[in-house]
Length: 281
Ligand code: PMM
Image (cartoon, rainbow, N blue to C red; front, side, top):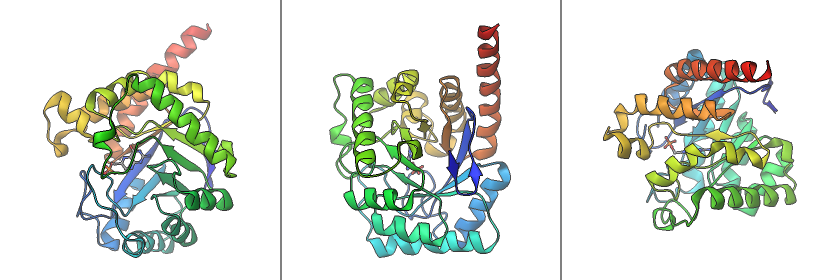
């Protein structure tokens, strides 16, 4: 898959560094609202080895209110402009549920759409189809305001697999090319900790959907439920989840702590590849 000027080939995993230019994201809210600070953080993640940067201007934590288009645009567009003006060539993904924000971000130099509502909005489907950029479809139910109450599943893995397949088919019907799509089970989105853990344990099954997988375990609340660690002390738990993703063949990881994750991911990938080599012998 080509994202921006870069070809992403092979099993990866590739690392997407997160910058949330929001006042209220659960993990880094309030730290990167100033565009200069956000751009500097993106550059730091790239220097640490990030293959892409994921930039968001609206918190999607449970209960978060929707942000007006103009506010979200004002948070992200200047960051992309600064990065491109300063010569950053790393692909940038825009984390948004809004067509107008995606359009403005792509015009400013972003290369990819990351939508936590899997292109639920027909207008965003149109932008994804017309722009021809790679697009992440993430599984959730409802919106951040009501998703917690919608975390009800008889079989979370089967239902997420089916709903991702439906989202993929809907996007393709709207003109998004299938080979441009990545799928994400959406850890923590309309999921209890048990649901997120079950999905992490069943990633090989989601590979049957036939598209590259992106997973975002970084600092999420299921890690806190398992370990009792507060959000700023969840790096060790994040690394364990990263290893599970890589061993299951996940192609892309969305994380805040790029250098540490890269080291863990490389070790897990070496183990993955050595067992493949042994099986081929
Ligand atoms: N998680 C968050 C935001 N955007 N996008 C994708 N594709 N997958 C995720 O798991 C995901 C996302 C929330 O986490 P943050 O507040 O740390 O960005």
